[in-house]
Length: 60
Image (cartoon, rainbow, N blue to C red; front, side, top):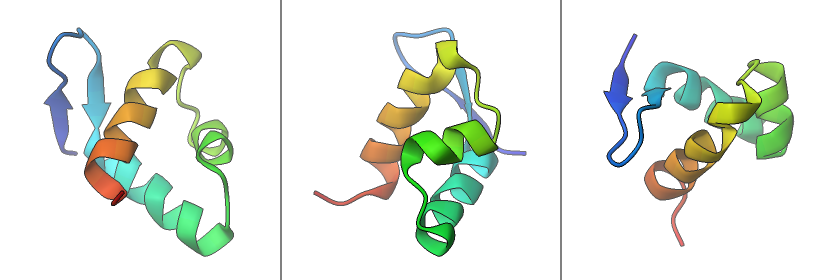
């Protein structure tokens, strides 16, 4: 599994889970919150996962 340590935070983000979440968001038409629920992302890590998904996987 691929992981990275996010700067300015002790949290570890698992990119394998994030890739699966992004696929589910597209295929299942889930919101990011629904994907985090489905993949059992702990509440205390959700903000860093949200930031990582927004920065790495969505184009603005």
